[in-house]
Image (cartoon, rainbow, N blue to C red):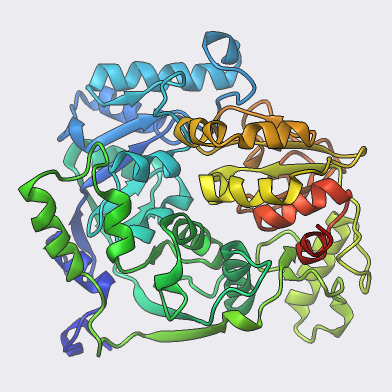
Length: 476
């Protein structure tokens, strides 16, 4: 179905149409970009391109720069940077931000944190905006009804210089999430179930919209977790219609509209929701009420299943290429077909990341570990997604709960989500992780990652193995 044939529009269609500067003969469009989040990993080449061409920024105020991937979460200040590649990356970002007049959030600032956590906290992320960042999990911001997606270094340079990007429009996929979350389940379980259902490439070429009876019941933190992992199903864009929950979160944020502009903004944002009769190119349905806690067993987020289940057997998979992928995953993860997922021993636990490093995530994990202690064989860390989240958690005493249970309490940053800083697993170590990716080597060369919710990771920490958090809660 072509755009011309659509009598009603999806939310994606509406936001796209408002940002088209020019349409080309090949069907691509030049889009205006409202917001650009800049971090230390993807920006150096873009800044170098600007310098080499003698260009300046079109709109310095439309960008916010922060270092998150390479920073140490163990300490703060100059000593935390050391003198290696990570230090050079952070220093280069600070220098480039100053040279080009971009607002920069230093590591010691109380606004500092993971780029996809602080964007919403600052009110830099707004409904109906086109927002980009040189990171694939930029789809997180679609939780606010923004058209948000990750871009490469050359595209970063284009946004710097022109505030535009040439893009091909995606098809539309709506994922219906109906039913209430059963006891012991979290939104991380739901999005893992979505990825398992449609596959790691199931959303490729589609802008994904989450809808259904579950959505109005979710907080913004939960919605961000949901949209964050859409990229793991192949969707660069994931969106949720803004509503009263969205507006309440954004009101009085530092960079959100104020005064009369606030009322006008809310009126506009309210109209962004997909029309009732809007037609999507594809639909998917998940019965949330039927789900059980989920953990990953392989090296892709789609390779996951109920923690009450067994490691699958590649031999029963009829499709040859998938069978080979499954076997490779099991070999890497050192798992045997038919073994129970519950009971697999772990070495490390990581609670944090742009997926699950927000205050609600920490609260749910703290509720599980309170009065318990990390298993003797396990090393566990908690890394807040931002300095703001860390301060909030400390005001609630969550840091004391975690430390009393034997967790390390860290400063904000990407940390063990990706081995680009001073946190990484040793070869062969197995980690219960609240992050978003379990690819080979993601947390360190030879490291083995099991994805799960914060509550499930907390349960693994105190038992020393993968387990059903509902059994832990039942014994409290």
